[in-house]
Amino acid sequence: MAKEIETYVKLQVKGGQANPAPPIGPALGAKGLNIMEFCKRFNAETQDRQGKVLPVVITVYKDKSFDFIIKTPPAAVQLIDAAKIKKGSAESNRIKVGSVTWDQIKEIAENKMPDMNAFTLESSMKMVAGTARSLGLNVKGTPPWEQN
Image (cartoon, rainbow, N blue to C red; front, side):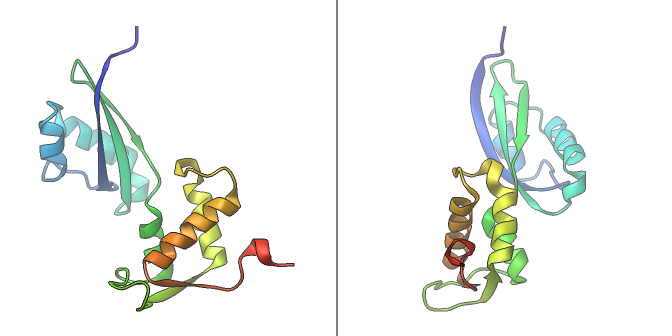
């Protein structure tokens, strides 16, 4: 018989750097989970992605056991890395802080595809380009679907 699910906890944690300090400790402690067990398992699974921000969805069961799914880094974080900037623009419609190419957007879209709400690479690329614009980044070149 399958375990009965009590709730889900969504967090963003740096890979290989989970510790019981806030925000992880209070979020998991409130649900009655073993915080150190989560930290050890998460750090072991994310050793190869050290320091990258990783969303994690923790499934909490009635018996206080848990499973978790690690997702791909947020598109905004990947865009900031690709553009080599510290943070996005405060006024993205007026102040541009950097630029990315369509090749970089395609690479990020391919990486994010499993976690995105898109069926085609083109629509995934459009979503990532929208995120880039909202960060205050210019998208250089013409989109691949408009080239002849």
